[in-house]
Amino acid sequence: MTGIQARPLADLRARRTSIKWHRFPADVLPMSVAEMDFEIAPPIAQTAIDHLLRSDTGYLDSPGPLAAAFAEFALTAWAWQVDESRVHLATDVTVGVLETLRLALPNQGGRVVLTPPVYAPFYEMVGEAHAEAIDVPLRAEVDWSLDLPAIEAAFASGVDAILLCNPHNPTGRSHRRESLEGLARLAARYDVLVVSDEVHAPLAHPGSPFVPFGVIAHETGARSVTVTSASKGWNLAALKCAVAVANDEATAELLARFPEELAARTSIIGLHANIAAFSCQAWLNDTIDHITDNYRLLVHELSIHLPEVRVVQPDAGYLVWLDLRALGLGDDPAAELLTRARVALNSGPSFGTGGRGFARMNIACDPATIGEAVRRIAAVAHPEASEQRVPAELEPAPAL
Image (cartoon, rainbow, N blue to C red; front, top):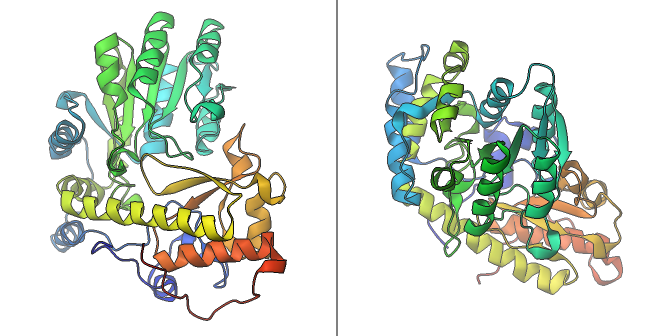
């Protein structure tokens, strides 16, 4: 195990005030909200402290040095040459996506393709943009890949944009280069804007390379905008800062029309924290090691206690898509498990088509939490084979 460690649950509840720790009673294992249980990197914390001590708490009007910091990280991590002049600020990734849609869609509505099961707030963003969501589900039977023939049919029927989630949430799958190339060719042919949410990309697992859509768009002539942040990779959601990158001349002109207030609503502390984060590679590597160790532990525990559960192996991030249909817990097993096992997972149906019988689990936590969650779920699924116990303190997880 790496040097990154999560604090005990009782300590986290006492120290943190976010909804992850206070939405549910203390006997519930909180494994739903996409927040890591690890301490943030010390250089990032010190950067935030330094700017607060200098009373550097005013407004922003541009990304300033963040553009160069992100471009350097993108080049090193993904061989993506980002034009710094095309980097814009957004309060967070969802705001960046929404404001892009507002600029790109017709004044009266519009049609936006989504690829469920997908990050539930995508539907809210499309609604806020007064557009219609067009579902083109992933091909679950083919490793949760994009259904390019169905996407083409949707594009041919008249579509303004597609929201791409890459790496995908909730499956954790990074779309393969050939799929992205196929999507880019279709987008160019039908003149559809691709808006790519790539916030989980810094957490790509070893052996699972991530390909930014901006690289593919440049090669194919597709119009696209990439929206991302250090918020997921370095656990900085509350610091409210993201970037939206125009990947071509047409979208550069589009993002130049972002409301002036969008930058002003972005946190100056968040901007400097993002800059610091993009240089904290060692911390990021240790965190990825911890997450992948936790994934192996989850698979091990399931093989012992719940062998009928199928797991979608993520390529990136700390969110795991669990197929719980064999447990007989209905369309929304997360609801049953919250009540009966006191484990909080994300509801599969909330992610749209393809989510029935599934749940999403956050494994960026102490290994003991994973072991306890599996045992609690097993006690519900197989009560005849499980000891009825709720320990006062979680036992250490086995080393793998």
